[in-house]
Length: 183
Image (cartoon, rainbow, N blue to C red; front, side):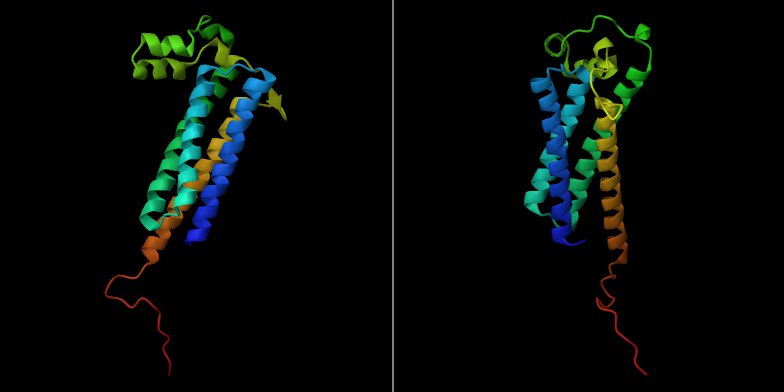
C-alpha cells in the first residue's frame, strides 16, 4: 500500500468524522437537542476516531504504523458501533422497561467511580429512547451506527490488505524481483 493511499484514506476518514462531529454539535447547539448519555459515549468514540485518523493523516505511517493506526480506528469505530447499536435497541424497545428518572452525566461522574458511571451511561435511560430528530426516516443513532459500521468495514479491509501484502513479500533469501526465464 502506498503512502499516499494510506494518507488519503486517513484524511477522508478524518473529514467524514469531523463532519459527523460537527453535525452532532450543530444539532445540540443550533437546533437545541439535548444529547443523552449514549449520545455522549458515541461522541467520545467519534472524537477518538477523528483524532486517530487526523494524526495518522499528518504522520503518514509506514507498514507497522499503519497496523497500529488502523487497529486504533477499528477499536474506536467498534466502540461507537456498540454504543449506537445499544441506543437503537433501546429506541426500538418499549418505554415501560426503562428507568424513568435517569441521573445527569455530571452527577454520575461525581457520585460513582468512572467505570461504574460509564456502565450506567451505557445502560441508557428514558432520554435515550426518545427519537427527537430524523433524516430520511432514520434517527440520529441509526445514522451514527451506519457511520461507525462503514468505518469498521474500511479498517478491517485495510488490515486484511496489510496482511495480504505481508504474505506476498518475499522471504529474505529469495530474490526481491521476479526474474524472467528466457529460452
